[in-house]
Image (tube, rainbow, N blue to C red; front, side, top):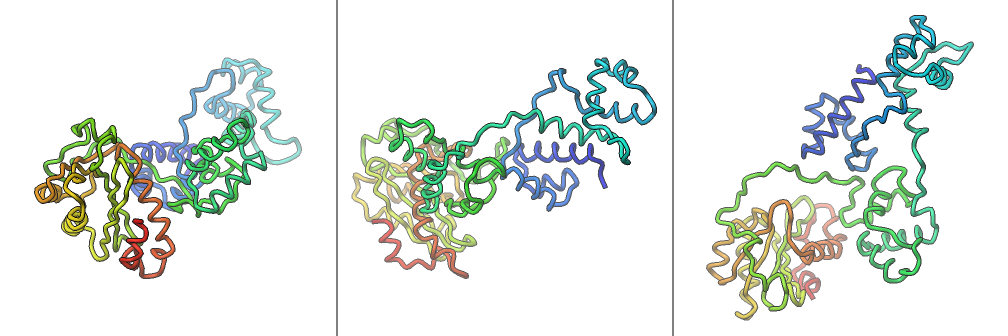
Length: 365
């Protein structure tokens, strides 16, 4: 069994490793704690890595000073002797023992860790939640229940309540109210209405660069300026929607200028060969002047990009691994399509593959 100091140190190291990109299991094994303990720590923060505490200013007692008081006071040292040892005023030590010391007539002793925790809680300045406003909370909850994303809700409030500051809220505030305990007054079950359905925030990738598994890539930085301007039709962006248990998939193709969307059904396999064949069949239906370029992320499903370029004469650009696609069209298409087929993919034994081809065509329309 660890002491409180050891547990605090282990928790601090756990978050350092999580911030560095480690998985929960790897971080728990490196720190030496049970996975359930790591899950409890992550659940308490909603998956959000805590900010590093600022260094003590010296105005208030530090944890090391409280630990020294805990050593000296039971040994019979007086308040003035302890104050001299710490370089503090005797009144500071006296107040500390009065507030957090043992109660006269009861058993117990001064606990430095409990005292430090109480001092931190007392020193916090409570900040009112944006959702103390009942009208704002009601609007946000109503929109979440109909599958609106926090970004959409924030834009909606800005458009319809632009002259009322109390009705404005940024997407991050909504996410924190859903993920972090005690950060808002929204219902605890509303996270189920997010498109991901997650109750905790998934940590981002680590900063370490990994070698790509896709040969002969042309990065998005080499893409012509006319693609970014969206002035010329025929430039596409693509992404992949995975079904339940990753058994099946739908590839999305979004034309950058018109936002016209094509869906490619991949019911049995979504490897590089299956994606190549599906994309070739979809692109073949397009007129030649609408086959200028395709932008994709660095998913291994596009490892056959050279064969697609040779067959279609379309230039294929792959986004930076850390940045994702430069525009949000494929991400929005993925979220909206996944939401539309969500009732189907959730069926036991089902997946995107259980959606009939005519339903995929209906979604594309």
